Amino acid sequence: MSEELRQIETDWREITKMILLANGITNGLWSPGVKVRFASAVLGPTLEESLPSGVVSVAGIRLRQVTKRGPLVFDAEELANEDLKTDALQPVERKSRTKLKTGAASHSASKPVAPRKRKQTA
Image 1: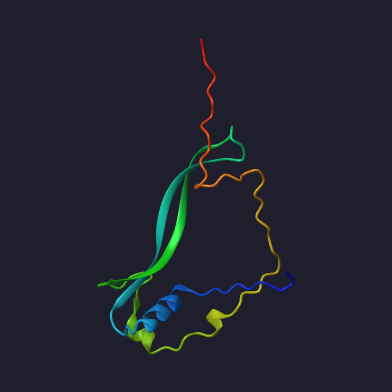
Image 2: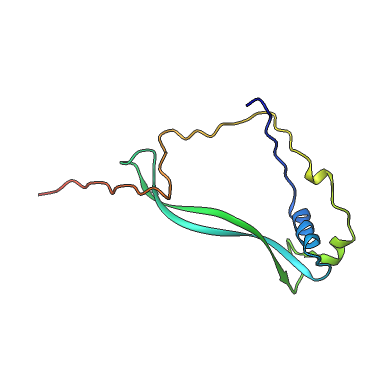
């Protein structure tokens, strides 16, 4: 596969604007956020070094209508009068690619890990 993979980034203002415009919403104050899910697992580089762990998954993006202005609160009327920033949706150039090193950590939250056997004391 010789095709270069792309990455596109934008900011919270543009994400909010796109969702509001897609849903025909032109009034009210809106705050963006993420929907998360939590899970527990036993993870580690080896079975002997595994520890109880927490996993956070981003399940989606949401907008919540609010009544007061604040950080990350956008006015739908103001956003409706703006054009979408075309430069906010441009591919991001990366100078180097870093490969994620997984090592021996091949355990996942969906794969059960056997409990560690304890030495019996007399």
